[in-house]
Length: 352
Image (cartoon, rainbow, N blue to C red; front, side):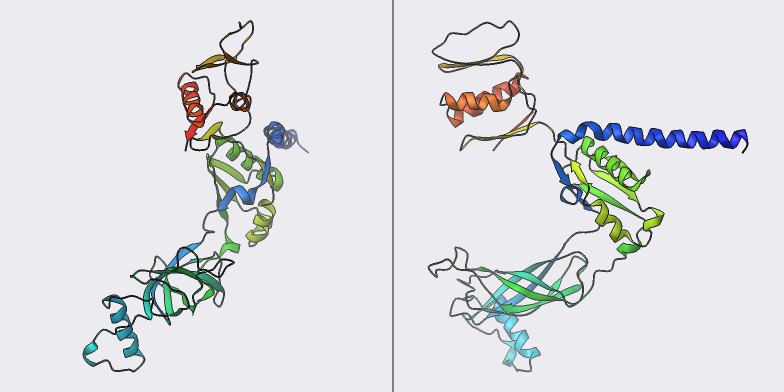
């Protein structure tokens, strides 16, 4: 073995060791967070539902159908014509037992011909109720105007324990009411690369996911493109079998890092926050109450209602103190807004 070859091998071994060392360093600290499966925090580009929509007629109603004859009547006339019934002068059919509806459904990814999907039926006229009605054959189209499913079946509007109907009898569902008639063309197993999109973009989480994938696959196969996008190249040993690759990756546990944030519901006084949210030393005076977050060597305040928090106190500590002192939701909102404005609250504030 010549010297040049030995040096090349040594450089490669050093680069490999350095790579895994960096990965280990990236993963060392994040283990303190809350882990979630990759499949629960990210989606694969191209793997999504598609919206289907169609126009149909619900018949068999007990006098609760559309009163007008413009749309529903013309639709019934055309339907009768297709069924071989001659309507003189193509006159609109009048019937209180029929209602025009819009039918919507979600076409799952990788759905195949013959699969059943649920549909939602919504009245578009002045029908009082769709209870007891039956949806006639309705083609459902996607955004490309192709028919992907055909719907038909009895409409259920739901009921409560006492037998009364729910509040919106003009909207109903047909469980397994549509049959898929056209496949969505895809060759997923033969993909050479794919893209993951985080539900909540974050640079730390994005880099963490890429590092975890590379560690799982044993090489540089994943790259974090931005705060919400990770590109993955299919390794040669998974070529033609991307399904098995994703089955492996989607079960990786990822520690999600989120930006410090406080959400306050002004109506109820509810405060929801993440961890590691702190408040810098500050004194809060509101009405006849005073709260002091003391730094080193801080003095004492002596108003009528006083609460003291130690240096490094969190938002949780502050909320507990405010609740103990009986602060109203409106006052709670004002206090947090003021803390944010003066820079004492180290988090984003959202008021609902």
